[in-house]
Amino acid sequence: EIVLTQSPATLSLSPGERATLSCRASQNVGSYLAWYQHKPGQAPRLLIYDASSRATGIPARFSGSGSGTDFTLTISSLEPEDFAVYYCQQRSNWPPVGTFGQGTKVEIK
Amino acid sequence: QVQLGQSGAEVKKPGASVKVSCKASGYTFSSYGISWVRQARGQGLEWMGWINPYNGNTRFPQKFQGRVTLTTDTSTSTVYMELTSLRSDDTGVYYCARENDFADYWGQGTLVTVSS
Image (cartoon, rainbow over all chains, first blue to last red; front, side):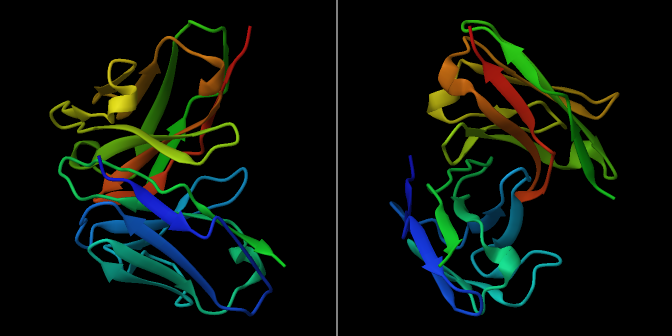
């Protein structure tokens, strides 16, 4: 079973700063990786799929990169609404097997 | 527009079962899989399983194999998730999500509380 490890667990930043979140897979997942944003009391929201493609309606300040085992989600300039928990999820198998990482909380410094 | 509407909150005793529904609208139901994801209290997101409404095929992680059952009713475009042998650490919010390679639309979540 593929394990996803996210780092750091918590990122304390101020609005306007750049956020860089990491996700490492225990095996090669190609580009089959997604990023989700999750806020309290809301459903998760798909941000990035196929490692680097922005989902519909996602602002350009969100970008994803990487392939194989190492992936990065970058938020170029944090807006107040971006403070949330972010999860990566892998889809290397078919039919889907949807392992999540443990999450990175982006909090206001 | 694509919508997934889930059933309401449930309170169950340890050892009981819970069945949560997810009614899809705004797209061709049989063309997309449905996954179930939960957030147990104080924990992160956890994938529980997937079903193909077209043929009923399912896939589960080892942790939930044998304890989770997914079924569909194509006449009402509804997917059901049943979790058995409930424990207190099953308390949390359960989500269904449409699968388009990744989970692009989500239900609003259903709170399941397991308490004696």
